[in-house]
Amino acid sequence: MAKTLYHSALRQLGPVRVTVKSDVLQSKFSKPNAPKPDYVVLEISGEEWGYNLENPTCGEVFEGQKGNTFTIVADGGGKGKEDTATVTYVGEAASEEAPARPAPAAPAPRKSSMTPHNTSVPASHPAHVAPPARPAAAPAAPAQTRAQFVGHPGARVGACLNKAVDYMIAEGIASSDPAFSQTLYNLVSDMVRVCAAIEDGHLAPKQSERAAQ
Image (cartoon, rainbow, N blue to C red; front, side):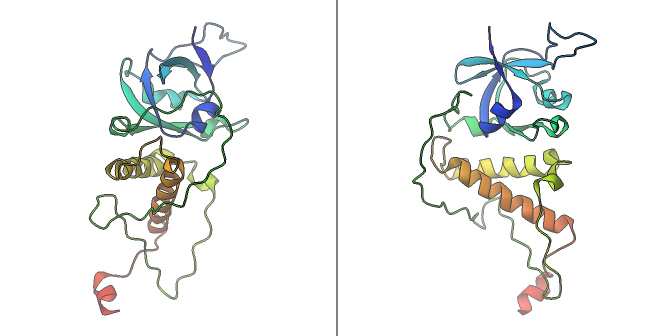
């Protein structure tokens, strides 16, 4: 019998390669007066887990995918915030060169000795996005909090995750690399900030204005 995998544990794995072993199923213990969450059986690093969906939308990425293998990343959720939980499809390419992530068992604590990784994106790479230059008179954008992204993680964070993972594959940064998680976090954060700034109307000066500087 597959062991239970909760959303919080899946979230801690970061981008992780999974093989979908079942359709989204209803718990046999669910009753009208005591509903239980639906679940889907996933294989992670050769071990099967019954992932309990934090909310119904978390199962959408697995619909019709039985037998397929791809990479996902979980986000949001938590007690009282179940509606904010998401599971985003990252892609299949992320698993071709990078080894599978560890199974959900908690890893032993380890003191990090890694040096900061250069997260700048080369101008020739498709993932390159130039940070917007703010006009001198424009007020600084207020610091953004996690709550501001809860409503649209699939549209913004998911797209940025895709680009960041593609870049890391091109750079040969595997998930076994000690710098993998921090590099991915830095890249996605920078891309999301750029997207947020542009959506808020903070555009870079026109090309003619930049050329005159």
